[in-house]
Amino acid sequence: MTDELRDRLERAPLPGAEDARRRAWTVVRGAAPAPTARTRSPRIVAALVAAAAVALALTPPGAAVGDWVRERVDPPEPPPETQAKPATRLPAPGRLLVGDARGIAIVAQEGRRTALGRYDGATWSPHGLFVGAWRGSRLSALSPDGGVRWRIAAPERVRAARWSPDGYRIAYLTAAGHIRVVAGDGTGDRPLAAVRGAVPAWRPGSLHVLAYVSRSGRIEIRDVDTGALIARPHRAVPARTRSLSWSPGGRLLAASGPHAIRVYDVRRGGSERTAPPPGSRFTAAAFAPDRATLAVVARERGRSTVSAGREVFATRGRIAGATWSLDGRWLMLDVPSARQLIAVHVSGAPRVLSLPGVRVHGWSR
Image (cartoon, rainbow, N blue to C red; front, side, top):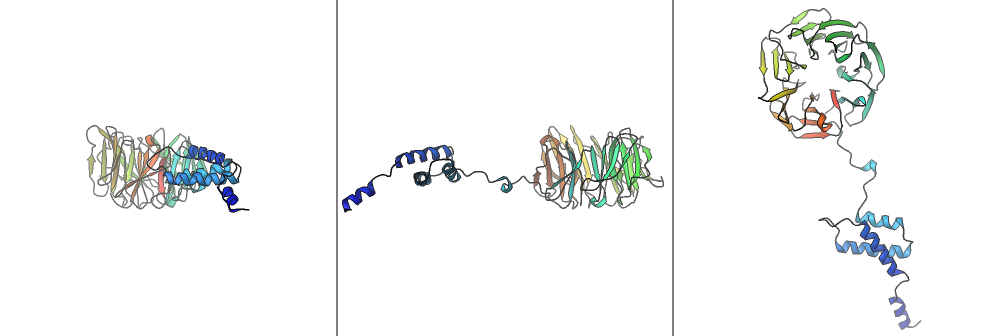
């Protein structure tokens, strides 16, 4: 072969090369994103076109080559198992007892969810060993995996229940306004008192001493085993009191309604009343588990605020409840309008958890 012939062959185009270039440009143009500040530079796109032209010249055009180009011009989303998941890990130790339209579930610290079944509400036993759950007039004790340990039929629809500090008693409130007490093994169900609608609260540090709001509108603190009246503060509770909350040592008891919170000093007597600013109302209040700090949620003109000694959070959404973490450093807020929970550090930035549409029933070990 002469030198002249060799030069002519080297300069001659490959058969079909021009068609390959056109096909490659069509693929690149279809795969490339619309021009933005982050659009690839012309040099990079030109290099991809050249590489695609070689690939198309050596292999039949098709999906494989198109995918190869798209992976470099517009990389696909990673597979589901490697995608960044919404933040569901709890910010503090323990497990959440939550409820939504599907029923009651336990959320572990790493975010794993265990469904317990369709119940109207639930409450932890001490140390999170069991769950008390109710639906209609049925009250059940469940193991954390959802197994039913026992079940009773109450005479009326159950509205709420609370486990005593030692786990040997459960006090439950019926829709007709009666408090009944049952042993921790499901035996001995009996009436205790006719009450108003506030959910009763067991006194910390005492085995079976319960606080509730009597039909007369006053707090009564009673030993449920003997029936002995421990205390009956003189001042009536605020109108429409919804909840009672004890301070950790069992000295202070907060009764919260929409238009006032009254804190009773059970040991020394006396009480203090706090009213919200004009035009606002209280929606939740709860003492921290490790100190006498009262978390208060108020709603005013389309804005909700959370205070724990100072204002720690504000949002336009309606906050329906606030639950303390075991270490007293976080508050888990129910925000029904946002269909999510918001975890608020009482001395730091809030954190949104992707637990849509749930209501917190308790935070336990």
